[in-house]
Length: 369
Image (cartoon, rainbow, N blue to C red; front, side, top):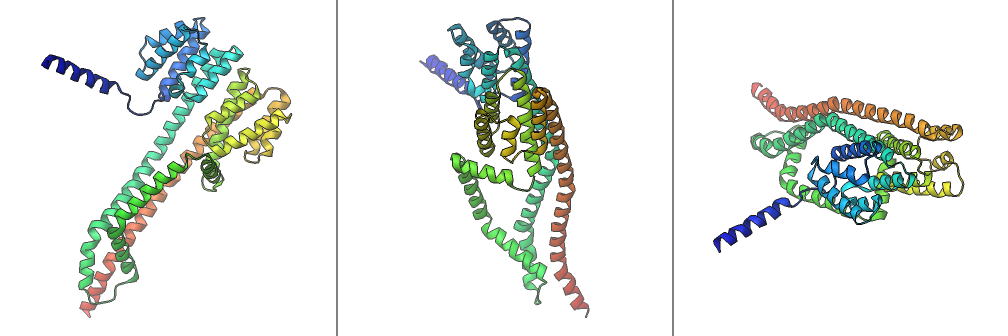
């Protein structure tokens, strides 16, 4: 019995350790690597099932291995590639499944996988560059908030006791600082609780499609950082249009796949309207132009591509421009933020020091007289 109990405990521990922690989605780097290898094997003439088995034997990632085993089982049971991968949509994401479907229908699965791998890898690298650019400003902001909070919570009460012993009128800046310190000490927990509740409430409301549409529309139109958001979205649109259109995917399906890749509900609504207009016979550029949310450059490049009959090539050049422009703007923004945060921090600290020191200097002056 003790041996059996020990065996059961070990089995339970193994089950717990086998549970997945965190997101079910594959890491973008792993997904990009898988798609690249899959494309290379398909181009070499290796059958789909043998290609997947070859990648599975490499043991790239536990989540990927589990998905590939399931996909291979589906293929062996007569599923086509799209339906087999569709069963693992939570792992691969909707856009990957859409690319597989379009690649299967067009007969260019290897091309679709290769280009999607490039797109995901470029997006992953761009996100890393953004994180690197904003790491220092964010750390500086957090440290500044913590330092100011510590001063208000623990340092200022000692000075307030000293100020209370002074029988003189305190300067306005000192009175403001005392009030801020008292407010911080008395209501900090309540403020923190209200902020947490508001954040939770916001994310709960975001599950409502109508609320999500309104907030996405507001954020998209909001003047601050609007150019950065627009450039990022137009980069995604132009990149995916180039890949899909070059892979013989029709424009309606192309725009629908682009919709899946963009999380902004407002942009999704606009792209849906564009699809309906194209179905009615509108030119692609005309449909984009009438929605009045895309830049003149994107609309002009689409028109040039339509007029020359080479939409894929113009979208490739456009996506390359938007990618570089987006990273340039973000890098410049991070460079501006660093000195601005340092100046703001310096002004706040100077205000605190000035407000604390001024009554003391006044007291010393009155004692000299």
